[in-house]
Image (cartoon, rainbow, N blue to C red):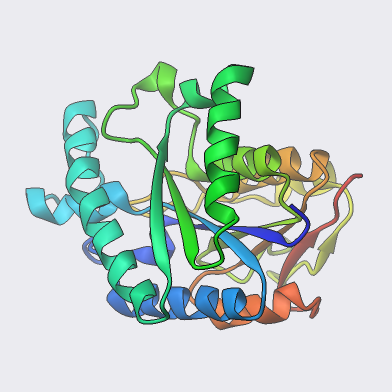
Length: 254
């Protein structure tokens, strides 16, 4: 889908660092930016983390749960909170949201991939609907997991034939290990794999290394990919317009 952009927002972008609860101001800015893209004629699909982190506070936890049952229970509570928030925010722009929860099993066979693809294409055919995808954490055990939402967003972008994938994180993009400056353009992902630092937060799963693996999958599928600052979503319009310095851009290998 030539004009389709897949945007992935991580837990660190959507929740407060202090306690993992949803950051209403951050979500408002993100939704406002995406709504602006839709108004300008872009089709957008959002892959949103935050369900487990959003549910943590209901259980009085001080960090990300380590046991599976609690993690899945947090996801069940948090996913409802997350979608309720998205629905209310997007409604301000006369946009509806659609929830699509996936496990690895949904992406393992051509038949099941076909069902997912058909559903997403039907949703994307409606300009007033923004599909929101998350891994189905409340039921996904190890053998059913995609991995994390960085990889899920890359696989979904390839599945629907997206033109662009934007991975939103808590920094401006990929930073050079030499002077911590922003790397503006990368032609070959393999040359920068050593740049990754493990900077995961208490309530998140993936880090920069995870993002670079997802980037590699996406660019190999012919998708131009960006890593950008999720706390500055107003930059999304400039990224789509080709402005340099707002993200790290990874050139498609096709």
